[in-house]
Image: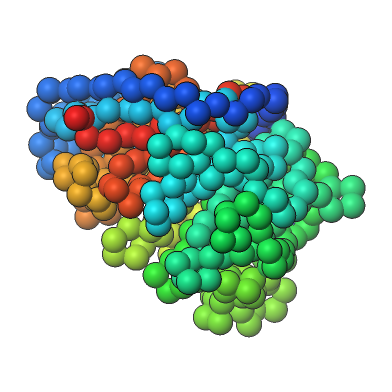
Length: 432
């Protein structure tokens, strides 16, 4: 990994500007109303081996940064593919307030977080439970609040839940991770403990990350945003800060014993990778590789394959432009020593939530990566072969809601929550 001095980085990044919008949350009542829609397609799927030069790209809109060119041909505007699978979309619950994450439970019920600070269980048939008690206070301003949730790898025996949240600290806040034990009646959390606190805290309301993913190694991977504002954004490249990093910790919150910067002077030991903007989507594939889908600047959302100790460039190396329309200062789209994205979107999709599909309900989708899209209100399906994106499909566009998270249930169905003041929980299952 190519190194740069701190003084050079600060000089390069001095002019960076703010690039995100605040979110607002309004109170909504809970409902168990259920309805069903059916989406049917009968167009044959494009051949899996089709490349950009012999197929029709799915994305045909004018790019935000037309002068920028992909580093390699398959890096953006993949072939459009179409599922032959037919499916039903069942609305299991309505009037959830800004739901942020859905985590299927072993018995088929769903654990859902709501950004204002509530965690609740919704049954497989759509009965909405009361908020679980014991969740610490969150700072729910802007993009902050109660964020991701993940079950312990040993949940069946230890009943432990992990969650991330924007933790109020003095005059600021930052992303933290807590754990607690779910009671037998599933109404409360006990032994609640904050096991990780991203440093430093900051008086802002944007770019917290964060997704939680347990790897096959049993370690917990946590994605952390760089907090957006120009005065803190350079910390994505600074090793004494958790901002703009992916960290790898034990279930107790300690740095994993073989982390790449564990013995590097001046580096925080939890750091796994460097140079991220705002990752809100992360998933392991069947080979145990971690993929993240990163909210980039305008025209620069990225799919990245995460490798130990690597630098993913932000804000020195990126596609896209500031949301103001001005260039990202002093940046380039590729540079030696930094990892190129496997794929990028221009225009952006505002990615949040990810799932590699491994179930039996949709054999056609096996091995595909599903990504929530908030900007254009869709679910994105990516076909990935030999580390390259070979096809892309947009699903659920007719429903008109921002897809915040997508997860696979024990039944092989996909479960989705939508980023609305009156958000919904959907079940995508084979057509009956």
